Image (cartoon, rainbow, N blue to C red; front, side, top):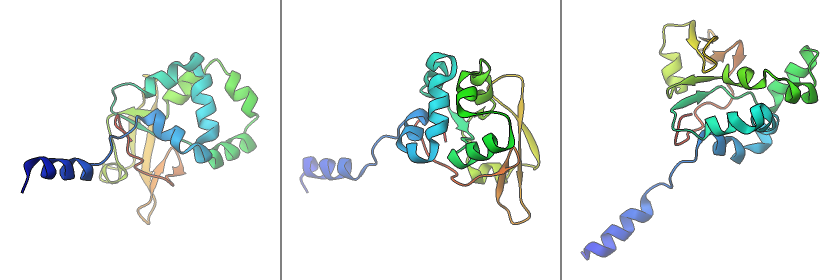
Amino acid sequence: ADPAVTDAAASADEEAPLATVAAVLSENDLEFATLLAAVEAAEQGVVASDLEGAGPFTVFAPNNDAFKKFFKDTDYTPKKLLADPELGAILRRHVIAGEVTAADALAMDLPAEVPTLDGESTIKIDKTVDGELIVAGNKVVSPDLKASNGV
């Protein structure tokens, strides 16, 4: 076999490089539109830049349904959230250092309190009796969206 042909075929079979956490969220903008707006608004985009960093990170990303429930259950509105000077810290409470897949989390000694990137808080990881992953009291619905710098 011609080595050049073999190398070209092998290269074509390789997966495309993974996008960063921030880009993965952007690619799923219909599910994460509110979160994306918050990430861009927080600290004039500093949080967005953080999620482009080397990582690895695990982001427990609230989807639009989670935000709707949050707005219904609190006195927050989307406008109030985006203007909150604490928004960056709030978002960092949804990120932990390291790449922790759903399987990794479920293998932990649960319930567990894991330090978040805000440096002051922890986030509770647990599971239901049926073995479904629960983070901060909420069922994880889209686990393990892979990124080059985390999940």
